[in-house]
Length: 147
Image 1 (cartoon, one colour):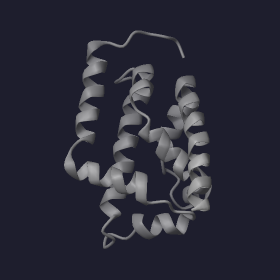
Image 2 (tube, rainbow, N blue to C red):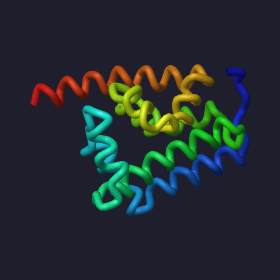
Image 3 (tube, helix red, strand yellow):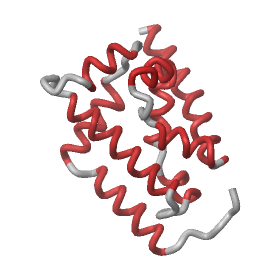
Image 4 (tube, helix red, strand yellow):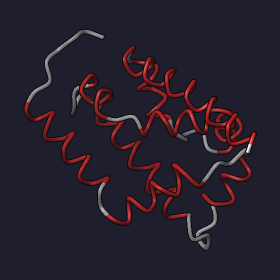
């Protein structure tokens, strides 16, 4: 990735993305998806994602679509990739969290986290952040299984 200075407009977008994450419903959604929801199969994921009666369906859809939107902004050049990667880790966390079931999920939903995946594949800084996150999550999963 060619190193370029971010613009003030890039910084504004990053700050707006951050502000959106602090909204109370989004905070609740992020807390559930990031902390409580640990599906081990595609079926467990789809049991929530495809069930509008599940109380966490909206949480999952909100968080996934938010991070896919943010990744798309980077991919389409609306915000500096380097600044985005430096300031945002949660999208990479989600991709890493669902990595063990990603292939099975994409058999049924080929568009699942594709923008985040493309971000990782296109930008070396994103790939590095993702790999660090994968290692961290592997350690977290080992601790969770030991408990």
